[in-house]
Amino acid sequence: MIRSVVRGFGAHLPEQIMKNSDFEGVVDTSDEWIVQRTGIRQRHIAGEGETTASLGEMAARQALDRANMTPADIDLIICATSTPDNTFPATAVNIQNRLGMHHGVAFDLQAVCSGFIFAVATADSYIKSGLAKRVLVIGAETFSRILDWNDRTTCVLFGDGAGAIVLEAAEGDGSNADRGVLTAHLRSDGAHREKLYVDGGPSTTGTVGHLRMQGREVFKHAVGMITDVIEAAYAATGLGSDDIDWFVPHQANRRIIDASARKLGIDDAKVVVTVDHHGNTSAASIPLALAEAAADGRIKQGDLVLLEAMGGGFTWGSVLLRW
Ligand code: UT7
Image 1 (tube, rainbow, N blue to C red):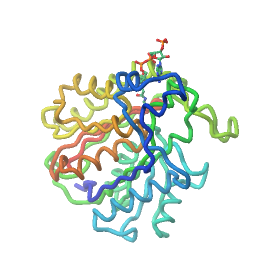
Image 2: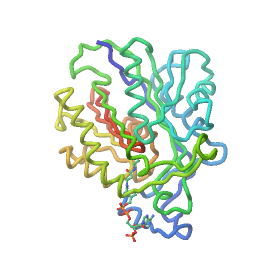
Image 3: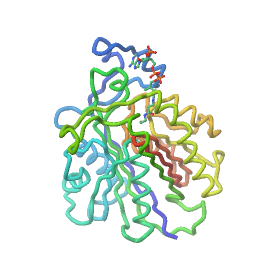
């Protein structure tokens, strides 16, 4: 059986850091409120000249280096983003060009905060079907550019950054001992649009628009949707929370992460948390967290890693993989 195995990982964050205290005096908020309700202490914000593609390119280069590969080895680039450099062409195509790659195919995938999960599942399908052998999967965002900086209920929550992995086709025996993606489960339900959306777009307002969120409504659905797709991963593989080495959730809110881990019976020590220093970086949050935990030696080859995300749409999904 063909498996999609992680060969490299990379991350890139803008240099500029915005601490919670930097919001005080700008909007009616406090470090105490933000930390208590979200766990966020700081976030990175793209500076002049930094864009989703430039952040994505840096993360991609790192992932290629760690994989001992060059752009010549890649046949597909998928960039998960909701904050593209332009309405078109796709940010993935921009990154392809920045990498000096003029073969293969590159496209964006838009599933908001679940984007990286959707992109890994899509890359896995390309690899399993034989359509691609080596895929660069990127999650890259500049949410700071679509925030309403006068809206305290959203502007304190998000940050910018990019992460990437290289997936390569490898023979496995089809068992849970294989390295690579073991199972992926994706869901969406457009009935929840109003709870988290951007109030602009090319075919409605002709503007980019700003992020709008009914945070409490999103929160209410989050834990149930997250556990639903993780239980689907367990049912598909016969694995369970005790088998997981690392839980790498989408980093939206520390309270959602803790509640999901508790409901699933995943030990706190196995949970990778970056929301405190990255904020919510949407499609970039999982590859950034993966890169951090793999770079510092927590995630090792052979570890069973559980990824999940939930976001605008709603979209939600899980990926269970052996590193
Ligand atoms: O990544 C995509 C998925 N997104 C998420 O998962 C986000 C999910 N939602 C959340 O993380 C939380 O709902 C929030 C962090 C957005 C909000 O936390 P909450 O505990 O649900 O607070 P709330 O919305 O119920 O607001 C409580 C109070 C309100 O005041 P009143 O109406 O009680 O007087 C808000 O106006 O907190 C107020 N508030 C703030 N106060 C200080 C909202 N934002 C702020 C703020 N600073 N920044």
